[in-house]
Length: 240
Image (tube, rainbow, N blue to C red; front, side):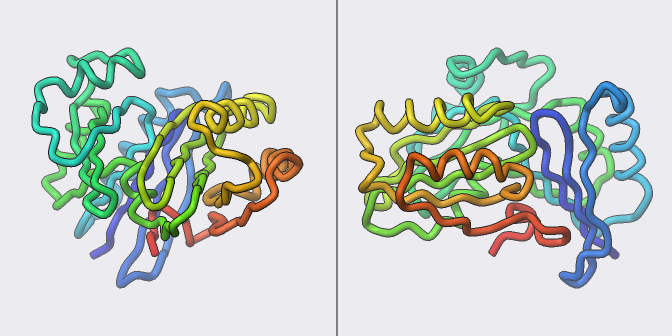
């Protein structure tokens, strides 16, 4: 039987079907004027039921989250902590926890309850994770100041690391070069990272966001494209 991997972003879902580590099908659905949200839901329902899956992996890049030190145990505060970053509806959103022992942090995040229940109703072994934890776990940090940027379709998440310590994580919508650059440069100034002594690493939808990267290169000296999501080799879904 096959494995289904799902990556949920703010306006769509990326899926990958594989068997014995060989990808047989990969595609994305996005909410647009031509393809509204109810159509996306119908496509998701078809995807979940068209095959009998051995295992399902779900990664959420939805930007309802908060970052805490590993070991924080007041889980009942999860919704309240997330609410500092984004409006939360605890009747419609499932509270989730994802721990990254490599860097000693953990994420509280929410996932739509309706989708969560549809997946759980399949009674298939399922792993849920947050994109920030998945991304962080695949970063090879060095003893320097680093910015790691993961690009999606009209969305961006990034980590600021200082000598292998997580200083900041954020996840936001990006629809223009101005938004993207302001987001990065404003953050650098707030955390005291100098452009000349900070290493930048870019992952994900680099081809789709080529203009963003070109603009960023005008301001930063040290930038490396680490992974590009070419067909069948999605960075987060495949891992390293």
